[in-house]
Length: 638
Image (cartoon, rainbow, N blue to C red; front, side):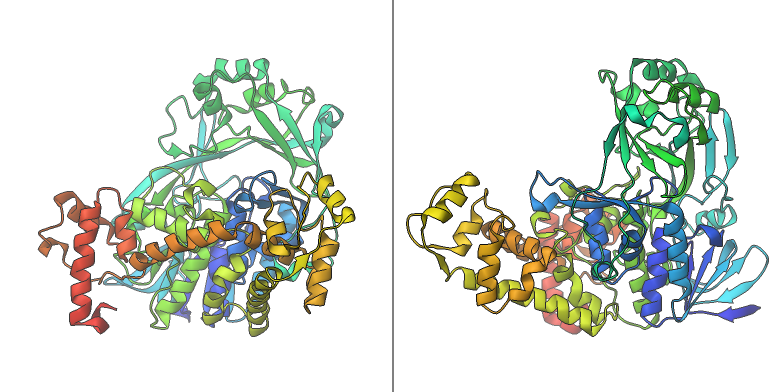
């Protein structure tokens, strides 16, 4: 007997679950969020930071959809830095160091205020089905709630097993129980599942470390924000330093001499670990030629002594962890507040999902986050956003919302997962983005705001502000092509001061700004003077706008070339493949190609073209077949 009725139930309120919950609330769906421990909503189980290379692009995309993570990250930041500034703007990446306790508390309060939505603590043991359709969920205490869709965002909790040396015990993370009954049900549902592994380093008492011998690292002088809402709040600027440390030969000796006691190397762990964030044991085994490895000591909060030693994750016994820790310079008297550990957990192969993140086998069942084989708070949150949107669309009978890899990092992430699958934790990198020059931090809002508005995720005022940014930048670019700076001794001396050639004839502002050595902020008087003259004087103090504007000018030719390529790819990405298509009847498609198309069930021709084993000849045949179907019955194919 059901004791309550909801339209969607979100199981798990980590970073994926929070975004799904918030999106559904804004879409007007009656939503229930369920978490094993209500005090650990949005817990930062690993490093206390948001953003970084390729991840910040995802956070800015979540912001474009009006998501929660960007605002909470800004509000709880204790250090902010932009990475890769010596490289091009395509890879500039904002990263915040966050107070992990404030982050989860702020997120909890934020979600509690969401309309149409409720939070309950408990363990979901079973999803109730009627055939292939969802009818409800059942708690560990027997309580049942009716619903029409479920979003699974279970993180590392499905059959989670924690390892410290030769000791192993069940847990979703240190201090929280694992979810076993639900994991067992997913296996009985016929979903293809696997086993992954991740880990976390020891937490160190900062008072026991000699910080005076360590290299300090502080925030950038200019504070940047993920969210447009944050700048107006006049947030308190906190700048807690991080510290850089390097391992040494003694560190390496202690660890390598004791590898037989490591859960990873003793054979206790069967799950596949992440290639891009290896444990210290892995680093020393796989990179024997390295004399040292860089570590970061990061504060976990502004009013705690607990610190996070990034790069030192391991699964050795606690006494060996402490011995290894004390070989580091400045850590001779270090004390651990929490030991490092490894954790294994079940995941569902993402090939089981459509690009909407809905299961191919069960209508209304959506999966997001680490359950899909990804790692990272940002990757999880991006998936949670899309799963929430599509669960809402499913409930209201509307077509799914699919982000293309040509227009977003979130689209790349999901496309990679559902078309290529993964057998190791997936992490986002800028190198995965073919069109990364067009997928920058500064234009995430312009790329995605129309979608967000149509879905009801941003209000009209936000929509108009972003529309104005796009309109004004376009107008200004055209205007600066027709406004000129005359040559003068004073101006040429200024150019020389920036290692730039003098001008001998009137030069338009556009050509001047395209020079690699010219930065708009070094010539702010000239450009803002022109903006005022043209009626755009209010833009002179808008740092984000000026950065965006400058990038659009400097990379104008490259962006146009890339846009042409994007348009070609979109033709394939916009051609939908009918759900009931029969690949067995297509005799001109290779046997391997047919098998892969049946296995992955791609939603578009573009997605089909990215499946390993599907040749371009197969894609061409499929394109011609669907084109013919489209001519005969365009409404049905659409």
